[in-house]
View 1: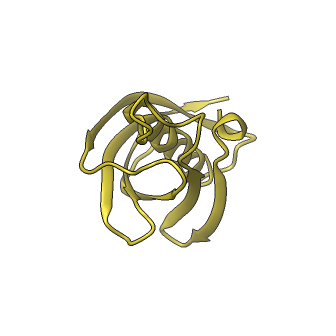
View 2: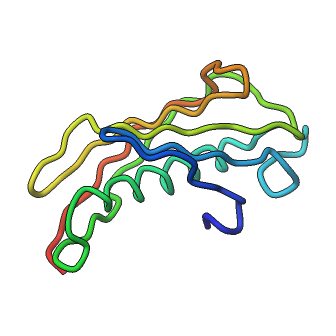
View 3: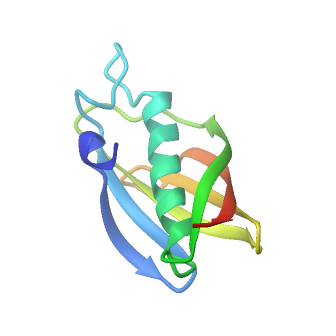
Amino acid sequence: MVEYLGIEFIELGSDFLKAKMPVNEKTVQPLRMLNGGASLAMSECVGSMAANLVFDRSKLVALGLDLNGNHIRPVMEGNWVYATAKPLHIGNTTQVWEIKIENEEGKLVHISRLTMAVMVR
């Protein structure tokens, strides 16, 4: 999904992961605006990657349990959106992540909350 949508991971900090995605023919709806499903897919991809960077992947894996989101404003084709995942809860069996997607001007486009199950491999 990451490759298909053109998502690129661009920054990793001590408490966040950031990525960008083009608003193009693969991510727009018929009115040539960012598709809500593409925003949710981006949120899942960035949040899942962040969740799995928290621990030793040879021992544990984080898998999605729940994803919900709100679409705030449109983004037209030809632009980029930027997602930042930050943890709200890092536990032994679950994680909860907030993913904010912003446009090129830094305005909020979409916000998601992703719950992950942490399981032994």
